[in-house]
Image (cartoon, rainbow, N blue to C red; front, side, top):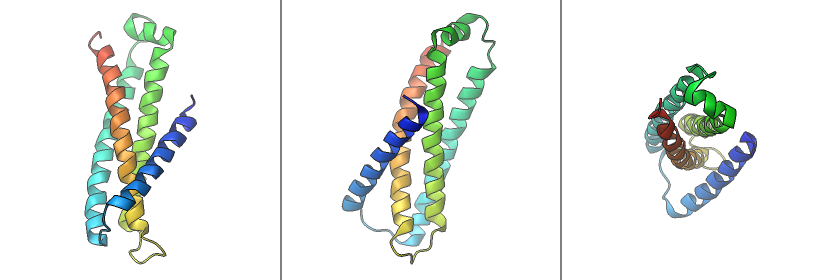
Length: 145
C-alpha cells in the first residue's frame, strides 16, 4: 500500500472522528482553542522529533553488513521507515491544522477554528496509535544492535 493511500485512509478516519466529536463535544471560545492548539502543536512537534531521530538512526548505520543489512535485504527496513514517514505525515498535518485553528478568525462563516482543532485532535489520536506500533517494531530491532 502506498504512502498516499495510507494517508488518505487516515484522513478519512480523522474526518469521521471529527464529525463524531462535533456531535459529542461542546463548542469552545477562541481563547480556549488557542490554548488547546498550542498544546497539540507541542505534542506533535515532540513526536515528530522522535520520528526524525529514528529515521536518522536507521539511515546512519552501515547497511552492508549486520542486522540493518539483513533487514534491508529482506525489505523489512523499507516497511519500518515507511511506517515512520506515514506517521510523520499525519503529525505534520495535525500540527498545521492546530496552527490554522490558532490563527483562524473567530467570526468566519462556520467555526473554522473549532473544526480544524477537532480535526487536528483526530490526527493526533491516529498518530499516537501508529507511533506506538512503529515504535514497538523499532524497539524490537534496536535491542539487537
